[in-house]
Structure formats: C-alpha cells, structure tokens
Length: 295
Image (cartoon, rainbow, N blue to C red; front, top):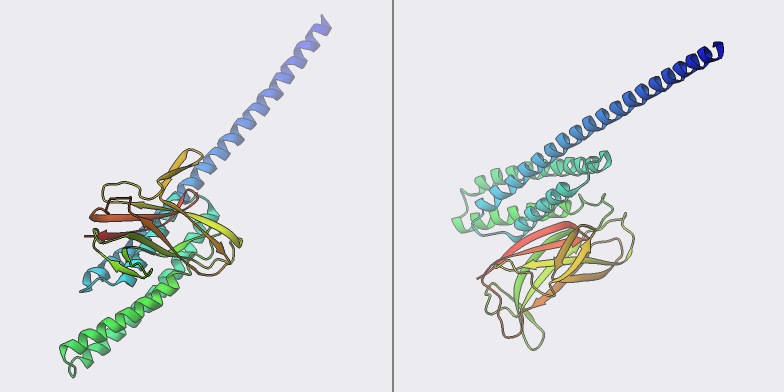
C-alpha cells in the first residue's frame, strides 16, 4: 500500500514537471513568433517608406521630362535607372541588411540630387539675367546646355548608387531600330519598316563586390503585340519560368562595361509599329527596364 502511494506521488511530480516545461516552451515559442511578426511589420513599413521616397524622386524626373521641349535621352535614361532601383526593391528580401543597403543608396542619391537642384536653380537665375542681352535663340541654347550638363553629372552619380550590391546591375538601358548597310555601318531609325535589327545597349556597372570572370544576363524584348522576340527560349528558376530573347555573355573585370546586343527580324517579316519594352534579368531578378517606339 505504501509503495503504491509513493508511485502515485512520483507520477504526479513527474506530470507537474512536464506541464511546467510544456507551458514554458509554449510561452517561449509564442514570444519568438510575436517578435518575428513585429520585426516583419517594421521592415515592411520602412520598405514602403523607401519606395514612396523613390516614387517621389521619380515624379521629379517626370516633371523635368514634361517641361523639356524635346525629349532628352539622358533624362529618360536617368528616370529608367530610378525605375530599375524601385523594381529591385520590390523583389528584395525583407531583411535588415537588404533594407539598410537601399536606405543607404537612397540617402546618397537624395543628397546628390539636392546639390544638383540647387545648382540648377542658380544657373536658371543667372540665365534670367543673361536673357536681357541675348536673343531668344541664344537663351534657349544656354538653358538646354546647362540642363544637359547637370543631367550628365547626375547620371554619373546615379550609376554609382548600386555599387554596394553584390549582384551585377545595369544602367543606361536603351533600345532602337537600326538600318544595317552592306558595309556594316549602322544607322539608327525610328521607322519600323526600315529597321533591319533592334539594337539593345546597356552598361554593366562597376562593382568591386562581384566576382570577376565570365558572366551572362538574360535580355527580353517584347513587341507591341506582347510577343517575346528573338530566340524566345525558356529557363526555369525554381517556381518561376523566364522567356528571354537572348543571353548576353561577357567577361566582367569589376569595372564599367558597355554591352550591345542585336535582334534580327524573322525572315520575310518586318518589325511591328508601336511601343517595345526591354527587360534585363540577372538570373530571375529584373535589374533594368526601358521602352522605345518604332513608328
């Protein structure tokens, strides 16, 4: 009888210990889960703030483009690079290190842009004084020259904001139709029917963090009817399939590298009139986008 009571008491003590351990584990797991949820909410909020700041910066480019009488290609390319940075942020992982890099890039970009805008305002003020002694043609030429100089400085500085990322990045993505002479000379054209090839050019940005050697990027050219031109091959990235027009292969030496690729029209066909979209992918990550029109 006494042995039975001891056994019962030991069993109750054991069950009590197990219950305490279970409750402690449950409390610790709940706290970890709540901390993780709070961290994710904070990161999402900060990511949205950076995206909003980039959107506002992009709108400033849109205003500048709308105010120019003729489209300035340097300004359009700079706007495209801002869009590329926004696209990269959209698909980036929600981690402290990733968000820190983007916030650092934006802070650098904002500081440099403030300087450029202040300089541009100063130049505009000086130009107003000069306008009293210059005819309208010279005034317009001076404004365009000053504006272009500011954009060239800004483009150079924008190209450096992605240098902290380990992955390759591209800047200055442009596309155009070209007429190819028998001598090999190429003439840019906006006419769809006269275009023999589509020329796609971009700059692989200097990046000391990337490993030097043979690299490749996937180029996707989409025509006005939403068809992928060129090879239209597919590559599988886990659960994502990418249709690409061509693979751009090059040897990368950790410095700026200019790359141009070409797409020919299918035999006995001409390129369609309308808006073309160009996307450049580093594996499955979209790193640059641009558009052009063939009339």
